[in-house]
Image (cartoon, rainbow over all chains, first blue to last red; front, side, top):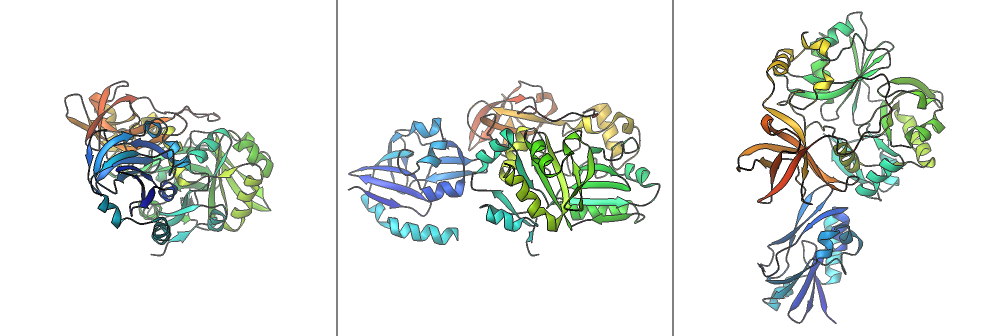
Length: 126
Length: 368
């Protein structure tokens, strides 16, 4: 079973060996509302833990997407650029944002597990 | 100051509204369906908007009232027939817009609909300019409900028969549950629609009757995307104390008969009519999917800054990003290529005609 963890910026990350898939959580999409634009990092670029790695915009506002770990961008999801509403429909599966070849597995340690994230998102949205 | 609630607050909560503070009021930004669905429902069916936070200022008393109000507003109030409405402005001496508003002639005076964030200041300004000679009532015992969309007339007619005979920018008195309501055919969405002034205590059952007839509550989020597609200005974004009606491309709202006459700001406007203006409000259509929001800087092809976006979003009905803003007059021609600075990148865009979404008003005897 691959491990899924969550950041305080409402990203999820699924680790499979050295490859991580990153997206935004269902809770994040509920807070954002209808997403109408997505911008992703360039393939081959390097992103640093907690740095910006994309943008999502709803009808109301723009929000940065952060990467929960550092690494090289090895793939991006063109589907969500072409049809950003897919992010609202299926944020934690098919509407992933980008894949990284990660630098340091230890960076995963500071992230939350599902139970911790659910508690965190409940508290912060209250 | 504690946050105010409109008479529909419980209804908003009942229908799952996400509430935000707006101009001192707790208002629904959206309901369960979300902004895009709410926007499209208004365009295809009908939507109900709680706009009770807006000011309803009644002015009455005195034979000179029309004359005195014409010294404040650049509207042709003498020609206004009872129950007819006009879009106008409260300006400062520099010709800048302090508020944009709708003036309706009533049987004993005038009703002016004011923006929520401006209403208390407007009241003081108008009162002092009228030298306290008239009766002014910023009536907070009334709610204001907008019903907008192609089905609005059918829905309203089921609740208050006869309303569908109203012409655009005209109003009249009707009766609901033995109480007087005042209805005008107007709105802020680019659709046919009505605005109903009704006693606070009747507002909830009144709105429920629209819902029973197939209409849905729509939040401020969709109200904003609807008005942007319709090319309409939002005070505080697209209009402010430093922009004149001429710069805002709202020349049509200043009747020719008033240009040579005196009103607050008339000197500046007269000058602008003759000599033109340096900046002008325009429609902007980005080439790509990137959204340019308020305060985005606008550049020409030589990388010189030529203006600023004042409103921008994704237009759910035109299915494309849309914006409006002010540019140097020499770049205001339709199809002029411009560049919008979004997150450090220059995004190509074109000056375009407003509205983005074509109007569907029921025209009466209005000369817009």
